[in-house]
Length: 240
Image 1 (cartoon, rainbow, N blue to C red):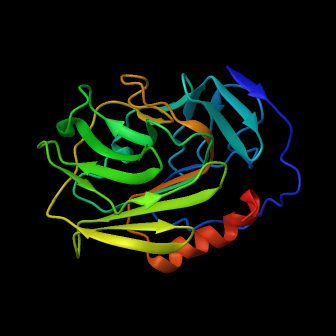
Image 2: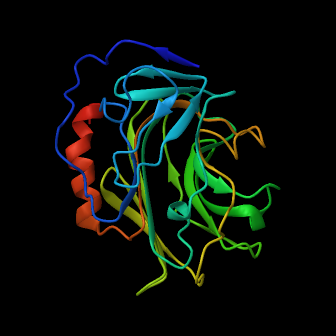
């Protein structure tokens, strides 16, 4: 179910293009080519054209609102969404309505809920925002934690590298806030869909409550200048 709302006032939506090299998924609620304003399908603006199916989401350009109990976007499993031994970048623009409990902004998991079922994810626990990556062994790599507030827009970017260095870098609003080193050579190849707003489509009660805007995934490690560029060309859309 999609409920159409009014356009956000006082916001200028930029027409500038984001970093496009190695872009595998790009959802932009402010662009009618990505979402027409009605229906349950969101189209990717990346050449891969990975569509998402929305459930219980309210639409108000330039974002989608998630109700914290049943809202989700499901993107069917595809080899394009599997980093395997390669580098990977996740970028999400979000605004949380609540800062309690555990939630998932974006994640790919196998069934089961344990560390061995994690491939990659962006998660919250109370006011703590973090990313988690797993290789199927039961070990996970957690990013640098960030303390966030409610009713505030953030760009969060996680850059996962396996070559030439093994690092996980966290960026908030275009600036690096920390780097974690790791020893992984690959990530779990989960057969489940990629989900936005839920843990594995509702396997566990970790529903996101708030707004999600632009979402981008890359099968490469974005540089700091590319992360900052994406922030600068998108920030006006969310009043930053």
